[in-house]
Length: 112
Image 1 (cartoon, rainbow, N blue to C red):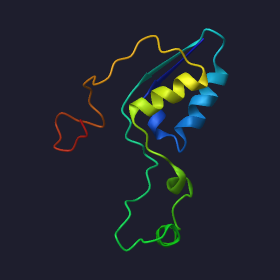
Image 2: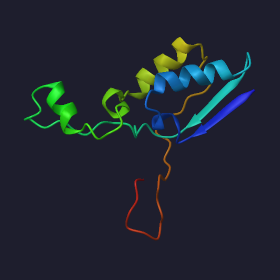
Image 3: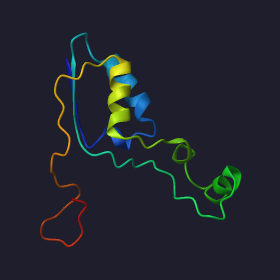
């Protein structure tokens, strides 16, 4: 009846595919509860000025899983639009909720 995601959707090589699969998994009237940032773990490496063509860029990173090169980083507005198009009704929405991500308050390293 429900799927709860915490720091998950942005871990997908294709967030659209994850959303479609989640929608198919839910019973009619089921709920998706999602919490977490859009950091996109599958983002490809940044292009350099000398990467004039896609082929040169891809050959420089040919050792990477090909999904890094096909992943698309989307804004929340884009993801929201995809959720609605996939068949979800947005019942409640909160943006800008402060949270810690991979943080240890005792450490200097964090991604808060």
